[in-house]
Amino acid sequence: MDAEIERCEFIHAHEEIVNKVNSEMPDDEILYDLAELFKIFGDSTRIKILYVLFESEMCVCDIAQLLNMTQSAISHQLRALKQSKLVKYRREGKTVFYSLADGHVRTILGQGMEHVAE
Image 1 (cartoon, rainbow, N blue to C red):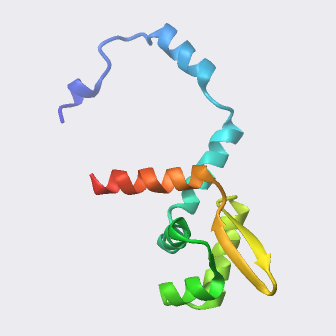
Image 2: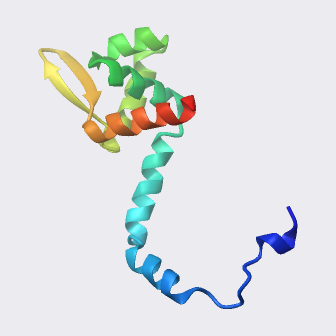
């Protein structure tokens, strides 16, 4: 692409637009947290686990069997997903069942799938 086309036509900034966007800009801490959330989605194993939980609540043993991985590996990834508040768990006797934390996680995954399917 021609370098001239990429340049702004004006030497000055569009102050009203810059000020409006600046007033709506979240704090750096919020943006950092958002970036950290998206990092969690950057691992294909975690995405597989989230997709499994999108379909059904499951225990570590079932997830490990389904994904052909060790229970230790699944537990490690579930820990990261819990810390990021993307999954929750409940106990039933000695068994722990995992599920997506809330509808927001379901929406993120669903929209991501729609996007990649386009």
